[in-house]
Image (cartoon, rainbow, N blue to C red; front, side):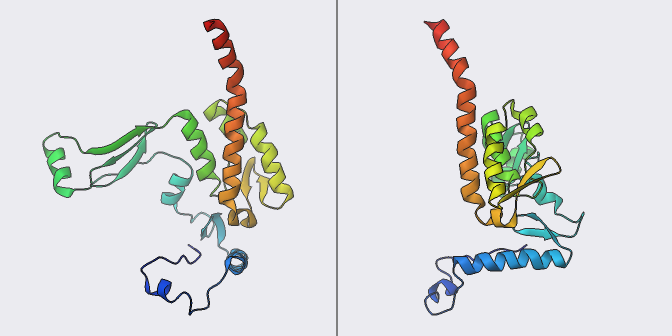
Length: 210
């Protein structure tokens, strides 16, 4: 893993921030791109924004989250995503044990994840990885077109921020540097695309209702 330094309030380093020489954003970006290239030379390929590994040694645990796959957690405070539902258990150990032993409630929070939310998470999570997003899979999962998103990704490709390979779109190292902004733009395009798809249906319903 390779992360940029983040100063947290209340830490000794934060208190010394005015006296120490700290890398500015441009310097950190240069250091990040250097690290990506140097690690690649050493046989460690980038597979997520901040993670690198030899081929076939990527973290399966982390990739399960980034690829939006299901997972089940056990024990106090554990989180799960299963059956299009996200839920978590109570954090208090004694309360958790009593609930298990006496068939009580151990689930603290639970929510159903709509198809629209899953489509958003698909973009947010997948675009953190070099596996990226698959236009065909996107269409099959969410019953909506990918054309508008692809047009935007083509713009990013011209700027060196994205690439299309193995039937998937993903960000380059330069794109990862500004991925928050790029993903925000893609989410806006996604929302507008869904609205355009839904508008004729809504208009027909309103007409029938009248």
